[in-house]
Length: 222
Ligand SMILES: [Zn+2]
Ligand SMILES: [Zn+2]
Image (cartoon, rainbow, N blue to C red; front, top):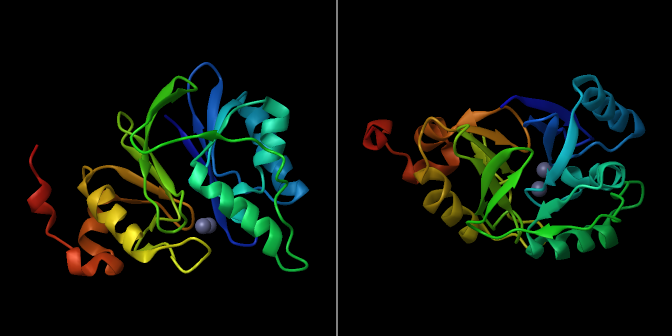
């Protein structure tokens, strides 16, 4: 499973194209904001002969959703998002400051829930509900391919802020500790901003999880 990263918009958001089977792909958090960013993404897909079979949204913040409507219009694919982030999408449409472009809201979402298994582009992946950065934040876990897309919940060496609309620190830290940190150490983590990391590296070295940091040997069971 090939994973390609683009860095889009003023917040340097990571947009991932995940290559699946039969020329299909998934687009995780399309943040392409400007026409030239949109073109870069489209030309890339064209050059690889890839057609998006679904858009996966880790949450509804603007920097992760600028490119959603154009993709759905062009490819008619489902856009997966947790329903609890519909209020987030609506909120930022209302409060965006003058001069900051808001995403085209004319996309429809297919709701996902914690623990749900989804198949698309010949790949299967699991939804892990991780509310806190936003009420409907989720991660997408590709067990077979050992890959986890964490959005703004978990970064390399940091965790997502929880002071934005609908955020909640306690839920966030609980979701990270009780769900993400219990996954196998070798799983690669692809966050919504910054470089990639692994569960093992975050479990042992993420300073925001320091009270919980544990020696990796404790998890060496296989
Ligand atoms: Zn966010
Ligand atoms: Zn973000």
